[in-house]
Image (cartoon, rainbow, N blue to C red; front, top):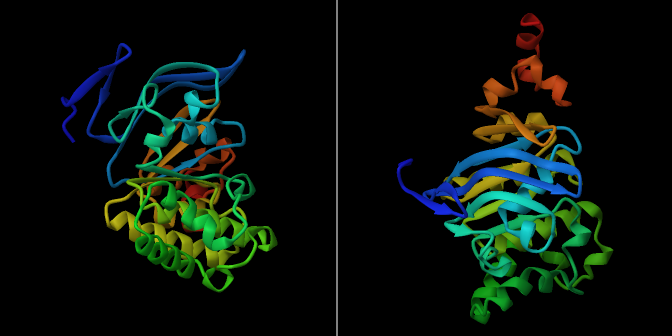
Length: 269
């Protein structure tokens, strides 16, 4: 990346070649700071994990990246953010969502169709894709997550894990340039979580930028290439997973040292 390729938005200088570029970001609800002094660049094609204790600002950071904050969720927003070259302050959320897909932590807040197949097709129909292309994508992504036999079922009758898979399938079917996921393994069993990350790695190898909030450090160290640790609304650590997650220091951020590093962590105490 060439750090000299920059553009000025609202008085802040941002690197335009990054998938996500955040400059001097602060966000608060009233007197409560949710994010403070965030400076972050995520290059196209990166696979980034975000970890940290409850209330550290992880989910809020994702909502900034896709423009829901500040365009739909209001608060005291300062700084500049570009997402796939778009200034989130001046771009419509509908425009940003063409390139940046998001999977929320609670699938029930994201699913609203009466048929499983319709849920995957909904955003594709809004984009006016050809009918045949929509049908192919619906079948492809339902099969990918083992939901094709439930294509005509009511999503309300699915288990929480199946709803999680449906929300992820619906987002992946849009084939965005950047995929944001908030605790995607939270409702999945171990084998389903491993399969999900295998799918994400395959997408990342094709050049898709993946950014995932994840509490399971075992999944992070096995899959992502970079880890951010948030606490107190700021980024405390940023680096390769083998460096960040092998340190016993992460325990003070409410994270567990992955099993493969535990002997190293004990010897460094």
